[in-house]
Image 1 (cartoon, rainbow, N blue to C red):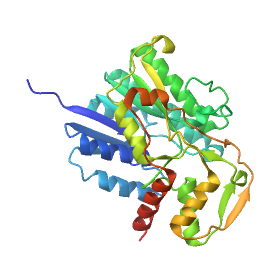
Image 2 (cartoon, helix red, strand yellow):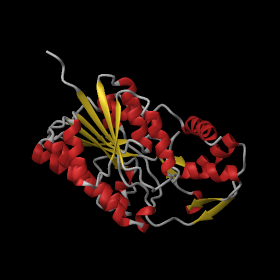
Image 3 (cartoon, rainbow, N blue to C red):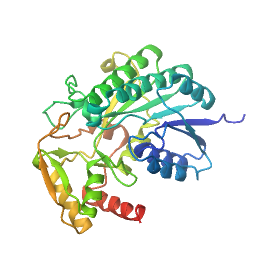
Image 4 (cartoon, rainbow, N blue to C red):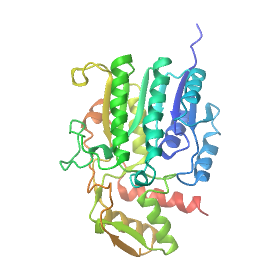
Length: 332
């Protein structure tokens, strides 16, 4: 009997994480068709997204659909046509500070968009949904490292609130419709083809241009910087492990994991490493902590490591070197 076609949907396929994930799947999951969805919005330069997409289009088993996840009819139609076995939902409106300027974009993408994806999974018997959450859900927590058993009831940005809402929505659908749902709390992902709104990317641009960089809280902040290849390894490792019902999840096939480097770094050390790699000295403007920011992030990854063997392999110095090499080549 002929084996039925196997299909994976990757939302946000032209975004930073979605692009790397779709590339990895298209290379290594030759028996699958990878269906990429993205709306190519203008939160940052769409030409970067188009260049990522041009690389994805080189894969024979990759198909792209331009659509907005907040459009219920469009997403319903795509799910019905693609018949996905697995859905990797990476699309989101990202950025903590931008949520102060354009809150509606976060509700549309991170709440309504996820609802439409969950409905697509419900109606099409998806075997495993893996969706992007964020370390920002830990909000005002001060205990470190952050563990998934910690309370997450005090978000300090609308972005964080929408990501926590997404976790609760996914749990509800897992409970009601038995859809295996895995949420991933990402910790400060960086690397080649990254987002230009991220600090390491903006610092690189400005240092090379001779422009001053803005350093918040006088540089006294820590982030669990996680290299993109390590992130992708973690996601791919989870695909064959859909959650099973447990007492801890009130009988729902739902689970949330931290995915980070498990090693926080000072913001000032990030700047120093970039200066060394770029062979330039940054002009620095020190500013107070910004609304919505947190002092430190630090991922407890024990449960993810126990399940999949996930072990971050890329020190910040190595990851920044790879980013700078990409950045120089990309902007020649």
